[in-house]
Amino acid sequence: MRPGIVIAVDGPAAAGKGTLARRLAQHLGLAYLDTGLLYRAVGRRVLDQAGDPSDPAVAEAAARALHPNDLERQDLRGPAADDAASRVAVIPGVRAALLDFQRHFGATHGAVLDGRDIGTVVFPDAAVKLFVTASAEERARRRHAEMLARGMAPPLAEVAAEMRARDARDAGRDAAPLVPAPDAVLLDTTRLDPEAAFSAALGAIMAKV
Ligand code: CDP
Image (cartoon, rainbow, N blue to C red; front, side, top):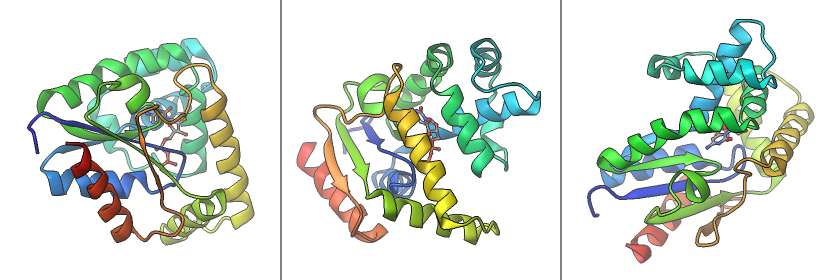
């Protein structure tokens, strides 16, 4: 594997990007960045001050004040953080404030980054771009199982509805919408377990580099 290589892993909520990207990074000896955490941490900062995550001035100030330690917070997952993250993510000034950190992270020693716009906006020249999907039903089932494992017990229908709303906001926004890059390799994990998804992704990467 060439040093300094950037691998972009994009896709909708709970498609298996995080598990896959982390494993790829470990296997390839690259750093890993979950860029969703940046948006989650910005959303959390806004919620901390009882602000509105859809307010551009408040959200942009939170994005500019972001500190790497914010990514270590334990309250970045769950319905409130999901919702706040996708609301701040619509705001172009928030996205702009987070761009340098992501580019610097990837450009320093190479990395696997997962998110929504890594292959389209953050690293349009990434050596490999994967777009990871799964059916909406399967993604809701996975997110529901994750939440049960973390001690939450929301109804599956509620998880599915929240995910649909977030996917629609991510795909419908003007700034860096969720869309596969034209040169992305599509990986549908609906019927793949994590091991099979990893093998398929590694095969796609090896074919490209
Ligand atoms: O884990 P999950 O796939 O549910 O979400 P995530 O990757 O942690 O991202 C949370 C939210 O941040 C998404 O719904 C997007 O609105 C936003 N996001 C984004 O806009 N761009 C990225 N590169 C990563 C996340």
